[in-house]
Length: 276
Figure 1 (cartoon, helix red, strand yellow):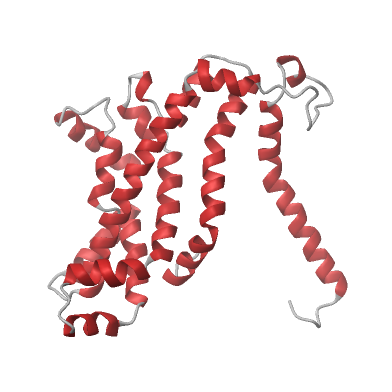
Figure 2: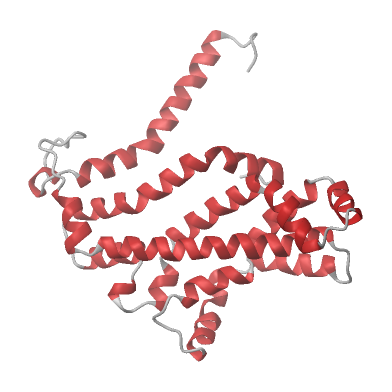
């Protein structure tokens, strides 16, 4: 949009953007509103956006009596370990594929990308049987260990970013006598902070919202993550206010992480050439 754009077109665009923002934000507002209502206020007609009175006891009930405090701790532990594994493994593999010229490099890269087209439902049963053979069902190992083996999306994201960095950086470091691990940790990893931030946000959101994995591998309630805890809450046929309080607890960390990492996230996506 430039200065010659008619005023009514600008106003129309702003109205459409505001309307779109309202449509996107309203479900979150309604979720928070419902979580603060009493049982009687849920069925009130017409419904109120701002409940009277505000009932914060729903959060206390979910947090303490339904054990969401434990589920939140479990989720943070799993997410933290997964993020460390994903960032380290993906950046290491991406650095090797981007910097070193060896036989079958392109074949390995193409095969790795091809795995992104395989639906998760296809590998779900074989993966379950593998973990069953290792006798680690009802543990966090199936949810954590794969992150340390490298993921196709993370490797591709980091590979595209490292390929965009000047090749002279690597050549100059080699001339100065720096070893490949030194080049990776001292030069390429610090320069890859935008891509690492983007991958970190993707990993956080994927692991934090993962429901299928914990549902398949976990049986002990004390090991549940937040999404599994919310499913358990739903199975208990609790009132809608408690469900929304649990949903707010799950949603809030994702929103906070995205807002804090938004600048680096957008920069990382733009620099790798990925588009939504």
